[in-house]
Image (tube, rainbow, N blue to C red):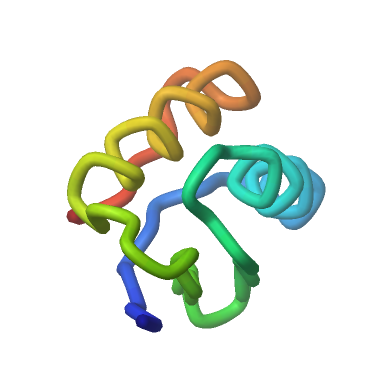
Length: 72
């Protein structure tokens, strides 16, 4: 399953780090952050609960940039 989320991030470098953090989260098959569009496209692993996985993605991303936001 693939979903797109609106995000709030301050710089392209932070967006890149958020992408890496998302890709290292359990349940995420692939994540791509588009800084210019302020979007995160996430492909989930089969059987993963998207809402619960995205809560973990948000926690991981907030370790990179504490004031980032993902609108789940």
